[in-house]
Image (cartoon, rainbow over the protein chains, first blue to last red):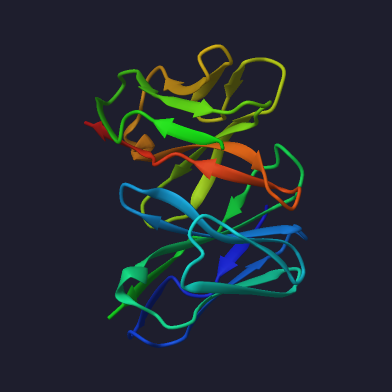
Length: 113
Length: 116
């Protein structure tokens, strides 16, 4: 089975802090994704990466950056956390071909105080 | 641009009753369609997918979905629900990114509540 592991289930940070969310997958997937999930809004794509060091902005990239130095690891960075970034963050990975499903981690519930 | 509309945000249903969760998509090209399920405090799990061929696809736990190209719909159904089906369900359509790879566009989700 594909395993996508997010480093923290719950995280509490303060406004202005630099926050790192880590994600690791074990299936040699080329694609990795970061989403945020908010009630009533579904999943919104923040960034995705289609190869090491390659990235593409999603629908809501403002206030976020990403890093992918190794194929199995994809990091989401909140440069200066704000309270409106309090949310559930989900990482996913997949093969790059059409019709391939994405496999999700269990999520990180991030609270910015 | 592709989009996905889940017409109901919440669906309450009694145990052992049938249920239909509706999903419509907009796309001008061939599509790949997915249903995901999210149980409380967990990530999303793939329930079923349509790639091509038979328009009726089934999951291992009794759900099925029918691809209807003329109505651009991919509704999810189950003839008899169980308490354990209580979860949030997301419909998604595959789209090609600017980099040539594939992403998913998700609907806003439907919360299914099964009442004993």
